Length: 230
Image 1 (cartoon, rainbow, N blue to C red):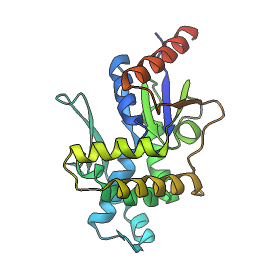
Image 2: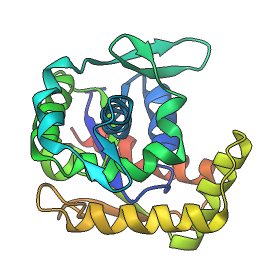
Image 3: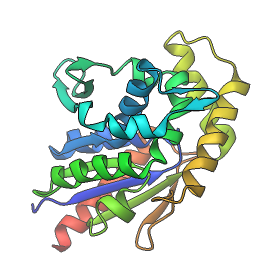
Image 4: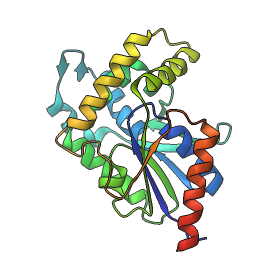
């Protein structure tokens, strides 16, 4: 069948990455986690003391963008690609609650978004991409054949994220996770450059009470319908 691009946008902790990985594996497509790219830039800023709780040297970060190399490298043992920052695997580090607390601030920087969007659009030129993030259907792939906007209640998203972090051994509280999610929601939806909004032609997908398997089956059916219509 003819390959398509699939854009999955939505709020944090809605399971975008999980379902996107599974779809890509089933279809034989390339999966791109754009959130990992922004997280890697946030980690770089943290490592170089460009951002702290009450401090952010935006201009110095902008001036350092040419020193930031981002790559995805496929891990056959995991079945998906991991994020590399300047040739170092940072997949585990970028998933921490600390990086999460800064990633939306980093994503607000227009110069950062411009650099990463250019890379993301290049990845999709030959189709066969499943990409998730905040502005995929509106900015990165405005002509994607399938656009999904994922959402779920704040409480359910908090519980999912809390369970995920706890399983990894992170010492976090439910309150900390909820505050982080609510903060990211506010920043993502109110930033001036490419805010999180549902594209007019995107399908709203509320997965509050859907199992991962049920989500996968519904989305795969949508993909098959679109491919059959081409």
